[in-house]
Image (cartoon, rainbow, N blue to C red; front, side, top):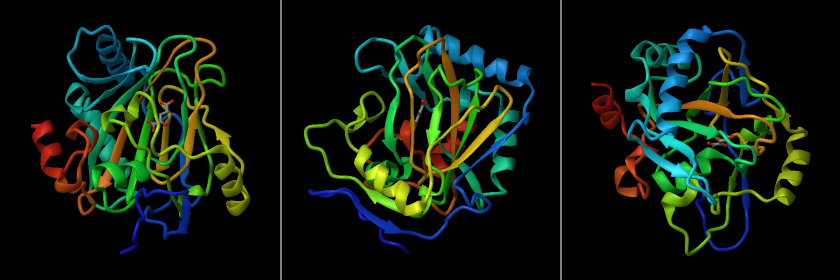
Amino acid sequence: MEDFQTRSNGSYSVSRIKDYVKGLPLGHSLLRHVYDKSTLSLVKEVATRIYNREIDCYVNLEPNSQNIRSALNVISLIQKALISSVLELAKDYIENPYIYQSRINFKKDIKANGWSWHSDFETWNSQDGLATPECITIMLPLDDNRADNGPLIVLPKSHRDFLSCPKVTGFSVEDHFSDQKEGVVSNKVVSKLKELVSSEEEIVLADVGDVFIFNSNLLHRSLPSENGSRTNLFLVISSKGNQPEKSKRKRPLEMAMTVEEFELEME
Ligand SMILES: O=C(O)CCC(=O)C(=O)O
């Protein structure tokens, strides 16, 4: 097995890794018109109720306000048929899929913060003890993602290079979702990686009903919202053979579930 060098003092390190996910040579894929809007409108209703504090849920707040940035472990609030259908879809990419993390990310307000460049797997490996990037995220937009409402931006082909980030001290691990400090890749390093993989960043303009799938080691970021709100559901799918190791997990289980915890959630 490859050795993923987790955070250490010093600078970034890059190492070429094999492709752990089937069928995503660029590290991502946008499937159009997979779900009908009424299926997603039920999830949007749940999201709105979470945002309005009508449903109790594990949440992270925006760094400078009391507004919710992310709600985690939302699978028990979503239609079971949708979860099963997403797991079925995931079988094209991952062996024995299960849901490792679920979250709804909100950008409800103009100037809601964006996300800095990072790869999810680097954090999951370092903070949650996830062994390998045999893991994908399936993003279901609950609003059409436009250039001006805080869309995701990806760096195609970056998933074949594991980028280990410097360790940051004096930082609570739960803070990661609110105010990224650790696991952030500097613009200078991203520029070098763009040259290395001969790639340019792409904005993901996905509509409600579309499905955006990306490799957990793909570098991505997102813009703040300049105009209107944007809410997206993210279902992270790992293989049952690739679970977080409980003894290494530093963050709450809402952020990284074992198969057993997932099955309990779904009961
Ligand atoms: O919701 C967003 O705008 C980006 C989220 C993201 O990059 C993440 O959750 O890893």
